[in-house]
Image (cartoon, rainbow over all chains, first blue to last red):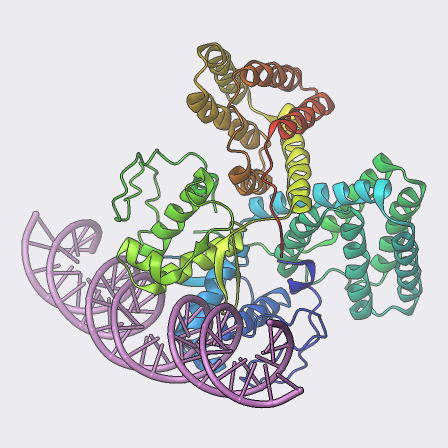
Length: 245
Length: 245
DNA sequence: CCGCCTCAAATTGCATACAAAGAGGCAGAT
DNA sequence: ATCTGCCTCTTTGTATGCAATTTGAGGCGG
């Protein structure tokens, strides 16, 4: 899977509850798979990540098939892929549900995310091409402005571009994908992230230390700053208390 | 997926070319899914990892279905999961093949593996329970003996137990799974690893530095030693030169 | 009164039939 | 002779029907 395949910043679907598969017509060069299973996978992943489908929700194959006007076959394939990606859990003959990791598991995922993001930041400090460093600074500046404007929605969007830029800066697509995948899997549990506006400015200040270290080529500093950032961010989250059977 | 689900050390299938799905009757507590798709997934993953199915080999759905005496449906589901796990690549209407990453991609995967293993080793140095440390030392000792005996087959098996023990020592299942998954994905390209027996002793010496650091609780030392080990190991591999379309 | 066993309903797993999309070959034109 | 366009054939994608398994409820026995 490429970085852009993951459903992190899929265009807002609005509030249309039309039970129709939304065409994912992006201008990407390699026109993607146009199979129903693939569209379903993206659609369902999007809904899970955006919280439309809450963790623990049942994913009845027949229901979903009816909802999207397809047969159960592509639904099953989409669900299988979502299981493999970690967004969905299923047991044989017992149905599938949106993944609902235990608190311990979530803690592990956050720790992994901190380490992976720190790794990316450190590698970026060493290797990021000058042009990309400038772009990173531009995004960082954009975030500064947005932190004043106080638009959590838009801040969240640009914030993801910021982190993605650092993943790419690692110059290692495999690590970048792992990191993004982890971010995506944690996403459903960080819905309330930028609710309080004070967080925006704090976040920007933390970012600043990361950016400065990367610009300096300070590998250890960038990694440490990013690790600290993620750990602080983690503290702000409302981790849904989930009980596990 | 749990650590044990991954097909790293699946019991030898021998040379029986019987086209019958082998029952995976392990004594694990939670009896696994017994669906044909799941058995196929394990079987195919095993064959890919063991090199029976070489990178680039075509995976014809109908052929596989005939070979295992099942319909195409479970075959398709197994293939989809393998695609998601990275062992198989497929394009719509064009079939699936055993993943054949480019040299650049393989290099990325090795770097990721080095970093992940180093992370695990560092965390293990900090957190590993005393009992598990003793088990690690026991495995390490076992490897020492095997490095004299000069049995590459068995050495490889115990070597995996060694690394798995360190993954587990991180006390972070998510990171452990990522690391193992990466190791599995690289596996098809490191077949010739322990061909020359001199490598066994060298490998044990490198392990020794890792173990000593972990026992000391020396996080940075353990990480550095493991990173060095993986990078040395990487140098020994014959990376299949693959051309990419 | 509690627990176990049996049975039925619902849901997933699998098989088969059909549709659609690429790939390759052949023919005709340049 | 070569290139291009069409046609066919192979392979994958989808739909639908049937089989198998789980699970809950109800009855029977202790």
